[in-house]
Image 1: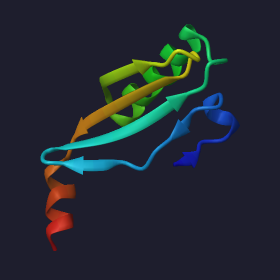
Image 2: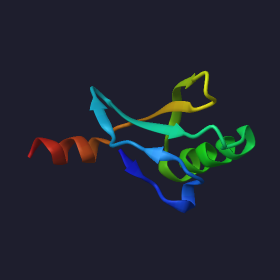
Image 3: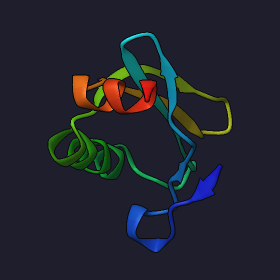
Image 4: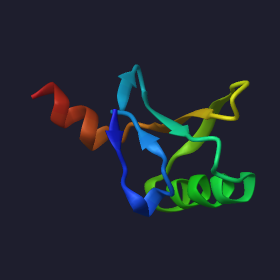
Length: 82
């Protein structure tokens, strides 16, 4: 997993994974990230990256793990096939 740095408020973003027509990206939010801050961060990813929320988990220590997904574009799929 890659540390996203200070710009993401401590979020740790994993490498995207392709499954079928979808691309998934795990994001781990530490317990000190407020719900409002998490909402803003994920909203920005949705607006500018085309991601949508696929699944969330809230752990006992307050850490959140979120899976984002987006449909693969046909041009990207064609580029992978060559």
